[in-house]
Image (cartoon, rainbow, N blue to C red):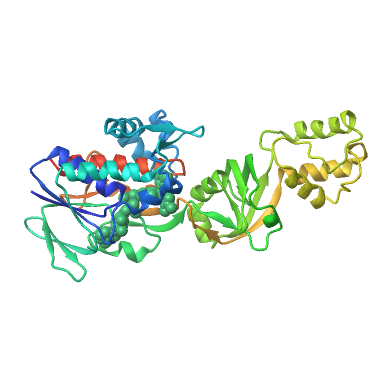
Length: 404
Ligand SMILES: Cc1cc2nc3c(=O)[nH]c(=O)nc-3n(C[C@H](O)[C@H](O)[C@H](O)COP(=O)(O)OP(=O)(O)OC[C@H]3O[C@@H](n4cnc5c(N)ncnc54)[C@H](O)[C@@H]3O)c2cc1C
């Protein structure tokens, strides 16, 4: 039996390995359009590869997928984060969990993950054809004829499509031509551009516990926020971008973002804190940062923004000063104009409609012997290793079943 896998990314390579385990006699080959396989794994997690996320209850784990949550709830039972850990550790990869739940190889080098996957590929004698761009699939009586750009057609009895995400709808046209519904793709996991923003001078500062939300919507997230020279980044912003990916695309990434810089305080707690300051440290100058939650330079920015004289003392803070401070600390507003995916773990929201894929096998419900794995599906997670986990899970199921 000939099994073709289109795409040599995490999902394609992992599914090829699973197909090899399942059916050692099959002739399995991976067709990759670029000159290299696993190139995203290489650059992932800043070159360290955040391979998965710490195992959670399946329903909780699945909540980290703005698209595909229900589908993942059904398939994570087959192969979940613990299985990923076991699989890599079984192959000799030492893994470590960071405080935020992200899991990396102890080597802090994505090449460790690549080498492990490639060792299995070689052991199983799976062929890899790079610079092989599959343009289309023709269904024949026996299987599929893969149309390759500027090369001869290739025949396969069964095919796994694992060609990843792409924010351009045209790139899914050949899958739509096969009869599959494509949920229009839009980018997810991006940072916000805030042109000429006042905070730009504070680039590099981060605050660990903020709440951010988009004006006039229910989209809100909590977490760390990083001020960059072009705008804002870090988990709070990336998560917000993921959950609001489609909405932000519709409004062309043009809206206001609100920030509560002290998400752990209620308004009353903040008011009490500031009133206490006046009493407990009456002689301290306003420019002295009273909050451990954020850096001094950010406090100076608030003082400046609220027109508070930095040389005066806490005891001289007026009621109006305190009200203004509370307003800015809990509801600072900035205008977003555009997004940036540069260097971030960007993914595609949208792709092959999940109701057309059998979750037990990852086989198309429309075309027999055609399977899907990875980001080509309408599944995407937030940052933290969830996107690779989805690639491993769908790749595992597709590979196991294609090999049967
Ligand atoms: C910079 C960056 C860092 C990231 N870091 C992390 C991280 O640390 N943790 C995490 O969980 N996720 C991370 N992600 C997301 C993660 O990399 C992807 O979700 C994951 O790689 C998807 O795997 P995939 O195999 O489905 O797709 P891909 O990795 O995109 O692989 C698809 C492959 O198919 C090939 N291909 C496409 N079309 C064709 C065709 N017509 N013919 C043949 N081949 C084709 C492509 O060239 C590509 O090699 C990161 C993403 C980026 C961009």
